[in-house]
Length: 488
Image (tube, rainbow, N blue to C red; front, side, top):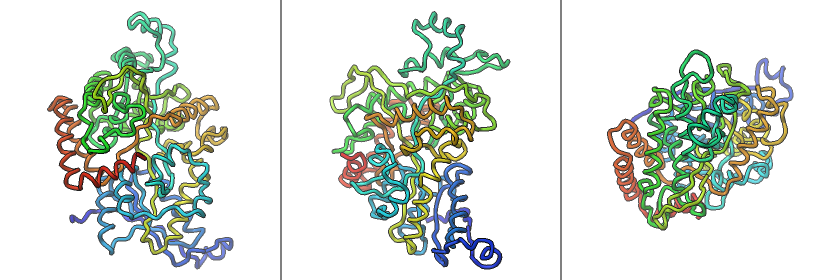
C-alpha cells in the first residue's frame, strides 16, 4: 500500500513541574495512558473542536492524546490500513456516516457501554439519529457528534419585497413564497437571476449549490433526488435490497440529474467550482437569493464575520415534488413527496481493540456530550449541527452569544426540528466500501455536468460499475449489510 503523508498533532500533558502546583484539582485518572484519534483535517470544522477538547481533556486527566489529521482523501485508506496492520493503532475513529458501514460490518467497533450513555445523556439524543445513524443491527455503536440535516435557506427580505412579489405573481401566476416543490424552486431561481435585486450595484443570482466533483456534490445530489425517487414507506433508496440491483439509473434519478444540471444556469457562473463552503460564502455574501445546504449556512449567516445577511435569512424545508417514482412498481405516482435528508453526519467510534478502551470511551462520551455540543451547534465555524432534544430547547442566551436574535434562533430551530420529525428520510449509504460507490457516481455526475455524457448515459455507466463493485465484494454480503443499514 502506498504510504500516505499525514499530519500528527501530539497533545501531551504531564503532571510535573509548574502544572502540579497550579492544578491540584486535576485527578490524573489516566496518567501514563495514551490514545490516538484519527480525524480528517477540516480546519476549524469537525476536527478543530476535537483538537481543542483533546488538549483540555488531557490537562484534566493526565492522559496523552494524539490526534492524527490526514487529508480527506487519505483518511479512509489510513483507517482501513490500520485494521489489517497491527502496528497501526487508532483508538477513536472520527468518520462520516457513509464511512462507518465497513467498520460496523467488520466487527471493529466497541458498543457504547451504559456508563458512557449515562455520561453523554443518551436519552437526550433524537430518535431519528439513534435509529438511522448511531446503531447497527440493534446495537448502539456511534457517539453522536454532528447531527446533519439539509434544508433550504432564502433571503426573507427579498422575498417580502412588495414590488418583487407583484412582478413574480404576474410572470408565474402564483405568490412568491419559499418553494414547496422543486419546480417552484426553479421558477424562483430563474426570477432572481441576472439582475441587481438588492441594489448594491452588482448582478445577483437565484441559487448557489455544490457542483465541484467530490463528496459535497454527491451528497447534495442524492438529497435533491430523494423527492423524485425516495418513495414513502420504501426504506430502500440506492439499491433494491433483495437483489442489490442499483436504482440510481431509474427514471426518477435520471430526471433528478437532468434538473440538477438545468438549475446551474440560475447560479453564479463559477458554480461548477462550488464546494459546500463556496455555497455558504456566496449566500452569506449576498450573491444569491436561495441555497440548499446543511445547517451550517443557518449559523454562518448569523455569526460569520463575512456575513452581510444577518437576520435577513428565512428557513424552510427541502422542496418536494408532486409525483414520485415508485421503484417497486416502476411507475410514477401522483402524490406529494418531500423526504428529509440527514446525510453527512459525523460520529466518533471507539476501536474494540483499543489498549486503553476506558480512556477512549470516556473521551468519546465527553466530546459528544450535551455540554460540549450545545455550544458547538450555535457556531458556524464548528461544523457541528443539532442532534439532541436539548439543542432545541429555549436556550436563547447561548444562541444570542453567537449572533442569533431570539426570532432567528426560534425559526431556525423550528425548521430543523420539523425536518427531523419527517418519517420519510434519506440517509447515507452504509455498506462495505461505500466510498467506492460514491466515487463512481461522483465521476459520472461530473461528466454529465460537463456535458461529456447525458444524465441517462452517466447514470447507466455508474450503475454498471456499482454492479462490478458489488460482485467483487459479494452480492449476498452487500444485500445483508444494506438491509441492516436501513433497518429492513
